[in-house]
Every structure is written in C-alpha cells, then in structure tokens.
Length: 376
Image 1: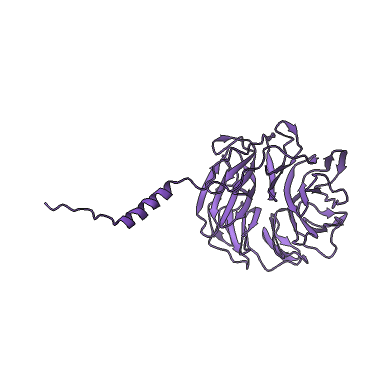
Image 2: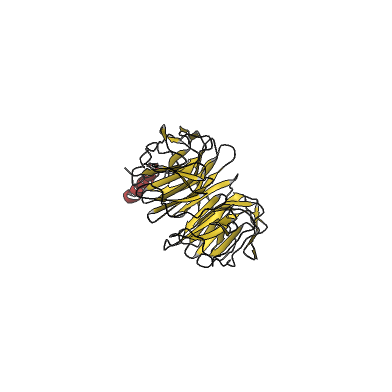
C-alpha cells in the first residue's frame, strides 16, 4: 500500500503560516482614544424634542419641536431652532430664526456664514419659506435671494461642498419635480439636475467622505424602479449605484466614516448595522430592543441614540458607544439617560458628543432634551 506523506513546509513558509493564523486569532485593535465621560456638561435645556444637532465653529445649532430654551437665568422663547455657545453651553441670545413649525435638518456652509434649515415649517422669521430655508448665521434672518421651497416635509439634510442634499416626503423642490430626494446649490438655492424616484419616503442622508456617493435611507422598496429595501446610494452625478444592502426596516439614521456606512434601523429589536460603502457587504450588526434613531462617529466608536433599554446584550438605555471595528458595546461610556422615546439626535465634533431627544434627566440630574459629553 502506498502511503502519501504530506510535504514538510520549509521553515520560512511554516513561520509565515503560523504568523497568519496567530493574527486571525488576535482581537481587533482597540479604539485609539478613551471613551467620553459619562457625566454631561453644564448646558441649556429646551422644552420639546430635539431632532437635529450640528456643531459648526464655536456654535452648536439645534432644531426640533421646542418653543423655549431654559437658561441659567430663565426661559427664553426660541421656536424650533436655536444656537448654543460651544464653549460655555449658554444660549446665543441674538440669533433667532423663529421657524413656525418643526426643524428636522440643519446644515452649515463651509465658511460658517449661512445656516440651512429643513423641516415642516412654512415661515421663518415671518418670511414665507416652505420647508427649506437659508438664514444668516449672524442675524438669523432669512436670506431673501435663497428660495428652494419643498412641496412637503423635509426630514433629512446633508452638505458636501456647495451642494445641499435633502430627503423627505416631497414631490417637488422649487419649480422642479423631485421625488423624495433632491440636491440644491447651497450658495443660491438653485435645484441641481440630480434626482431619483423613490417609492416611499426618505428619513436619513449621508455623503461619502470624498463626496462621490450619497447614501439615503428611510422606508421604501424601490428607487428608479429597481429594488432597494430602505437603503440606496446615488453617485454625485445622480446615477443609481449597485449598492443595495437590506435595510430590513425603516432606516432612521446614517453616518459615514472611512469606507463604512452605518445605519440606525427601527423595527423589531432595532439595530446598528455597518456596511461596506462600495459593496454593501454587512461588516457587523448590533441589536437592541428599540429603534436606533441617531448615530455619530468619534474616536473609533459609533455612538447610538435610541429608545432601547439594552443593546448588544448590555443593559444601557437610550445612548451607547459601540466599537467601530466590531460593534461591541464599550461599557466605559455609560450615561444613565431617562425617557421612553429616548435620543433622537447626535452630532460629534472636537472630541465632544452632542445628544438631543426627549430625555429630562441624565445620571439622575436635570438635563432637558439637550446634552453635551466631553473627552476625559
């Protein structure tokens, strides 16, 4: 009987093989920086839900369903949008666009001089503006030459360079038919020739870091007649890409970082899903027990705002940090955030996390619907 003998690997080949095996068994690298402090900084609060937050320069802009801001000296009227000093946490008193209904999206021009608003409103500062407006960062007044009225509600907004991408339930922007998504020249309000036909509605938008793709999520089943389940991507030129991961349920939030796209998803359980931004392959998924409504990325972590009581098998209500490489919960960040509806807005900048929603207490201390967390 012939006995087949396995050839002996040369020492160098054997070493390489053993090294490769060892590397596959090593845990993923830890985030480079420590998580944020779990204690919230001292800031103003508001009397209604916060839906959107954007940090720009030394200002933090917030929008939502509130009508007043509660400062150290008392309550100040601010209808649906306000600006906060990023250093002191105080209200910026001379900025008051005064929208007459909810603000759901905010973006800021690269030079910081113009603030773009999207939402349910029909007037800003007493001027007719249907669901989209541009206001001065200095005075808060609506910019008269900028008009891009939407026919129905705007839920999402993202900016890259001189292009403002918006999503919602509208069928027209300005004088142009645009079904649920549109692109607008940020400096003029002119509607760009960038479009798609979405059969549902769009709740979230994010742009690839290099601006080459625009990802959007919401509740829909097709885009341009092709199957896309709650998630899709267009090129910056307006072509529908082959990127087609299964969003499973309503996609409340999207964020991009490097080559990954992160989705905050509702439905049974709720979850955060990480997808490859080119292929659509799912890299990881972390489930909770409630909708994930807001996302932010900072220092190797994905911060998730939700109305969950647990996430990733860890009892951590409403606000949690997940490792960006594998989705595991980072238990060094554990603020105690009250409220059933939870956290609805997140922004990250300058090693800080800004959160908004329906909460009224953090770590058993009063903190009404807006909070700031800083690095150690």
